[in-house]
Image (cartoon, rainbow, N blue to C red; front, side):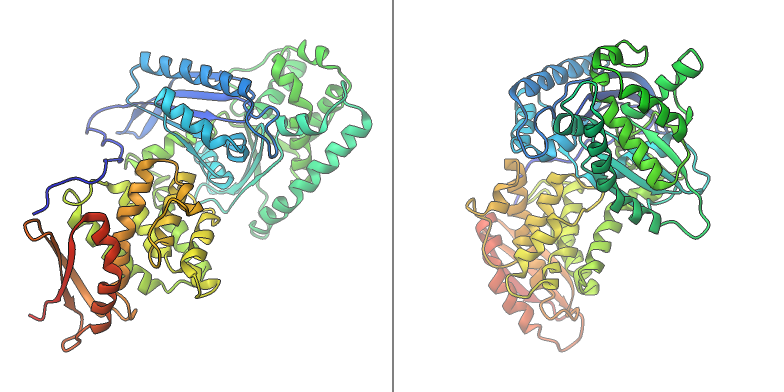
Length: 544
């Protein structure tokens, strides 16, 4: 038997029963970098916040919409992340998770920045899409509020984007991310201090135009007669709540969770803020110097969103993306069995939804997925050392490998790559989606090559190795269902090291079927496997 291991183990370590791990979650945003450190109590299950850190780094300053992250902003971010990691280490965290959002997503040097963070600080940062950001914000809000099956609209106004979410405590009905954020709008559209009436009107019209489509779509997901409640998260909304409390009550409540204010009060605050120069805004008790620079644009986003939604009041929730990251981590580690348990299957649901959208032959796709996972399991520890996380990526690629047929049969593997890459798969990071898309891309035709742009988009050597090895397994699995009629019932593998052979024993589903086409296709597709693992593929029918 072959005993060598051809790939690193990427799966996160299992949580020992009875332990209460400490987890750090870092959110690298356009305006600020946040960290929350929590103690997880799996038995409940819940988590307790141990520490919070926040630094207004302005990573996206000057980078949006299509620029680069500035050297000074990168230096500030690196220094902040280093400080956060030192603090996390001092609190003896068991794991650190990190995501990057709008500014890094859009910057031409965003991936270079993430690679530098990994190289210099040893921190793996996951880049996530706008919709995935919205999904995790929803998880964070659900961890801190009970929706009682009543529809709620969640709005999160960040530095570079605004997320709108509709849900009732179950699976989100609607997720969106719009490229309007407090930093983006201020840097691109505000040049006067205080803002002039003409700039204010242009800014207001622009925000309204950007939000209208997503608001209309959100409203279409409401059932007749439903009147949702509006929940606001993020620094902009918390700052406006604090400012409102300071002005109306003479004190800022701590915590702000559950604080409410009205659209009418918001309009009055904006009318006052827009007339104040920056120096006077900075003197207000609820505004930090940096927040004062962007508060008018951020408040105007909230005003226009509330107006379009027809919402007269908003309630603050202090949990958002960072807490959502923690809930997602707990779900993926099997630590949640309560009302959020349905979220654990989000990856499977979103893959199957995309397959249905592009008219994939699901019975055939599921057979290919079953063969892929069977080959994966039988060769694990022998030909590769990938774990459950990578196994799930292979399953997703197997289900979606033929989705490109929706566009055209010719070069459909390339169409599959494009559709998967742009399909907004929820529950996955951008790096994971890139792996899935590449696996599907290489289920047929040419092998992975450095000259292929999609292959170069894989960020790490590990990701490229994963695609090389798992796409070779996927090719064999596709061959095993060549006629798409379920001709092969099962496959068993033997690795013969002395003969340098990889033997496949195929059990036909129907007596008398010689499976000639499947055997021919295996012979045609085996070259990728043989080149990758250095073993000759020998297939035979088990007629017993």
